[in-house]
Length: 68
Image (cartoon, one colour):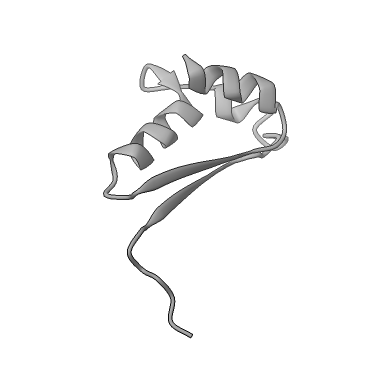
């Protein structure tokens, strides 16, 4: 069996609780936007066919940040 390598996906793991950080690390400001938005923007700028974001803790808040 051969794998189809005609498309490349980027996966952004945005599911952590940030417990060692002391709160919602993904929503913390970084370079003028939230850390999760900066991460997704970097993935979108990469030469990939699809960007997949995995949500977990604070999923509704992170999704809202990504929609803005």
